[in-house]
Length: 458
Image (cartoon, rainbow, N blue to C red; front, side, top):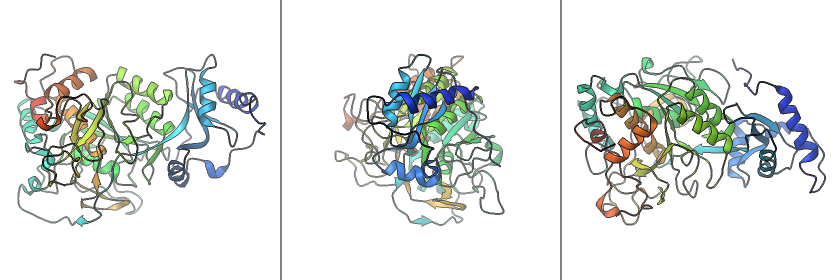
């Protein structure tokens, strides 16, 4: 059952803003009659994907407005044909308004690579290592196996109990609706906390797309249980926050609400494997990110994939956010990952390396036993996903491992976690030291990051 969306404490504020927009804000241009919103332009599954693929990547007819940086945004309807960017700019200049933004649309930061599926079947003990190159100490791996040993010594195996918000398309965490939705067989129900669905406005954030379940599986897939593959922080508590629809698109409003909700529900890490188009700015969203950071949440986001967008973009470029680029099995920068000084860290995303990669022959995806693409009742080890989405999941898992380890002492805030991950990361020799080489501080090394014997001076 859906619930009404919570808005600002006074509806009069929204009505006044609507009237201001309708009668006063366009006086310098051609007259435009105030009209009722077109029902076809609302935030349903079809309009989101159509809007994103058009030249206007926002929800038609909507602007988000905040009275204060900490208040929930109000959705204001604007006249048909009005430019939401211009409307937001004018509204934000008014006294008493802290932020205004078009209701921009983001998309998941991964794209299909190979549609072939490897069927789930029994195999040799320890056979996961043949697929999960990204968890090993190989050139492209981040040495999760070493980190597992460190966390066992610390008495917190698998980042036991660390709460991680997966702000994405949901997670396949339970059976529902007589088999329409099934629980992923390699996720433990006890390791999934109560979440929230901001797309359907309810408390059942089940995945329809497959992206969120893959992200969650990289972070917290059940480990040493004789099934499927493994997860980095396999005893963490993942909190599903659904902000992307069945097509992988989400609005600024839903993402902002998701970030704020997560910050208010005691999560320690939040991962956002999604991006807005290059250059789009939203003070409403950045306010939410700042709020979460100030409440002690380690924010991790994919920097975006070249082709789907054209530069690192929100939420990765927001305040306090760890912006993640992608590397390959050969330890190279992935061909879809940006060369930019806005990258904080790099982690495995799979796929091909860029043209200067010294080991371009290695082209492998990130494998997990997960929900099959757009099939919420079928599961397998799928080759489909590569991207900075997958890379961000690795960094989120690494952040949880650092928080659960002994390395930070009494100081375990977002800045300390970020500093530890960057100080222990490793940049491939071929990449050089230029700030815009695309690696940021380097490829994360979770074993080094969780080893109390590795001193970093921070």
